[in-house]
Image 1 (cartoon, rainbow, N blue to C red):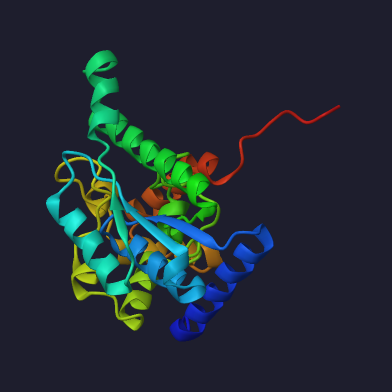
Image 2: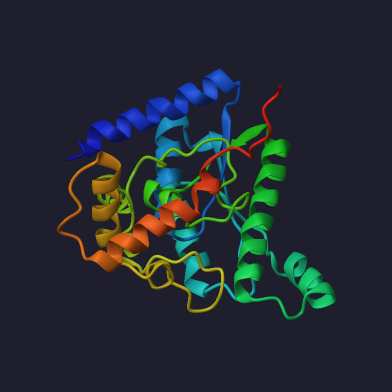
Amino acid sequence: MLNIPQEIDRICVFIQDYCDKSGFKHLVIGLSGGIDSALSAALAVKAVGISNVHSFNLPYRNSHPDSALDAALVARHLGLDLTTIDLSHFTDTYFDAYEPDATALRRGNWIARIRMNILFDQAAKLNALVMGTGNLTELMVGYCTQYGDSACAFEPIGHLYKTEVWEMAKVMELPEKLISKTPTADLWEGQSDEAELGISYPDLDAILQAILQGSSTEDFAAGALSKVKNLIMHSAFKRVMPPAPERV
């Protein structure tokens, strides 16, 4: 069982140390309106202070209105200024002109990568590091866009299961609306994380924890266990640096 208050302090020390060793005082973060970015922002504020955290909301025209409202709610709750940059023009210009028949998945991946382009450019402007918001659950099953939301300087909650993210958010007293809302990357209308993954986060976390700790998996349904193992295997390339041939 994770000691949540102790882990909050440990993560804050990690953030402080990483900034010190990298020579940066400021952090840039995208606030999506979801619990992962909300918790990451709260940890950043606790670690380096409000004045050193710069938050951005990066919606697309099809984004659910609640996403922007919830991002603003988090920013107000933490005392952060929030800058909104609409991605619609960047996205529609490309797809309308060159790829009008692109699937929702391709458009969603594009949006994820455009978001990180903007965050890294703002980080260059502000002399800051881009802080990631990915959790262990989603990183392990590849529920992220390569060089999109997985692109960052560091992942402060990258070792936490999704269920632990919710627990920590409660301890840090983040708005209940964020904790109880249906998780979604909001990359297309009606999208939800658990529907796309085909498994609930509590079930996914239980299986992942057993696999990663080398515990028995006999009690899990064969179909669910096979699904998770396949997700881990087929997303392995997202968790490593691009390979190159060895020198001979």
